[in-house]
Amino acid sequence: MWYWTKVIFLVLLGSLGLWLGYELITFPSISSLKTENPVTSSLIVYRISEAKAAGKEPKKYMIWMPIEQISPNLQRAVLAGEDSRFFEHNGFDWAAIQKAWDEAVKEGEKEAREECEAQAKAANTPKKDCAPSEDDWIPPMPSFKRGASTVTQQLAKNLYLSEERSFFRKGREAVYTYFLERELSKKRILELYLNVIEWGDGVYGAEAAARTHFKKSASSLSREEAAFLAAMIPSPLNVFNPEKNRKRVVRRQRVLLKYMNSMKLNY
Image (cartoon, rainbow, N blue to C red; front, side, top):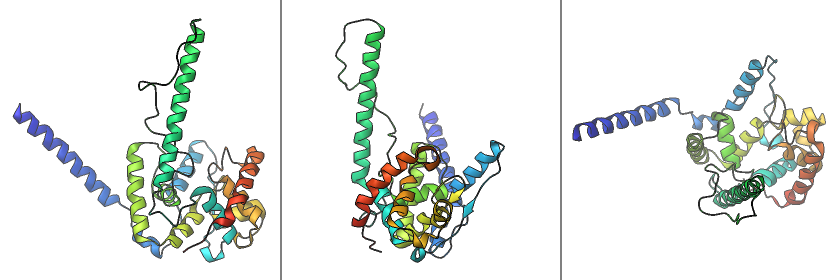
């Protein structure tokens, strides 16, 4: 018994060592981002492979722009919508994460209640007590809404990680987020984010977005135009795609216009 315990322990230890070795070998050179501007990202690679798999011509429209040449209107609007405490936290906004978790739990309780009521109705039985209990379903991995993931976390995901949703990926995201915050200034993180974020089909970065949607440079975006672009960020291909759901984008634009002026660019 002791022999097999040792064997299992050594196998697990060896597996852990191999995994750590792999992570160290493949770990990105985050410090190089201090001076080097990325020409692609994990998200762009994924979108290109996705297009090829669908038999479509891959698109990539990306023009790097220094943050000094990106309208402060857009910077404020993006922070208002994606990470209002960007200059206050160290990459993780724990208050926002807790809020997202609480919302996910409420959604889980609502789903459990609706399922309970549907079962009672289908069985044609008297309505039973459908108040949530400890045994009711609660999402094991909350589908965190925008606001839970900070700008730095989103940058880590876009630059280095896949689109899968798992604890393993979230763990790697946390590690990359820590090193991005440790190695780079807030100004540089925001500059990177604004230049690699997706803003439409094959459109990446503020300059490409401004030219695509408003036929102008990102340096001259008005408050309204900036808020419109920022409103698209959570889902630029679907939910907040102006070609599919313009009214939804406009509604979010109005909300951002109310809050963006309060954002201070403290970099």
